[in-house]
Length: 178
Image (tube, one colour):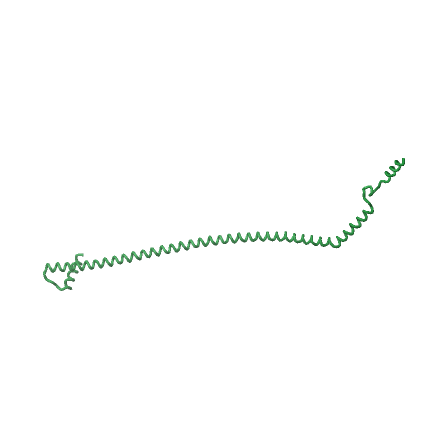
């Protein structure tokens, strides 16, 4: 029976409350005081620094985001400026090409006109030389004819007139016949 009573006593002594959960009250209080002491030390010396570091990082990140936005806007402005300058340069180069082509055409036209004028001048000079040569040949031929006529007349008349009278006579006869 003793055994039954001791079992019954042992069953009655079951812990209640926190003890039923397996929590020792003294150990809990010691652990709570240790936790509060560690929390106080961390709060006093560490948490402010960590918060300051986190705030600085947050500020740096925000500045980076703002800077990225500004850089993106600046990039878009520069891209627009590059496109504008590229178009302007293209227009200027096209204008320069057209101007150069016009100048080249003008130079070619002027060269053609000069060469045409030079060719006409050469032709006129050649015509003039031909006329001069023709006149000279006519005069020479006329002189030879006069001499032939004089010699023929001499032969026919067998008398010789003086040279100036001969020439006047032959010239007169030639003018009448020509």
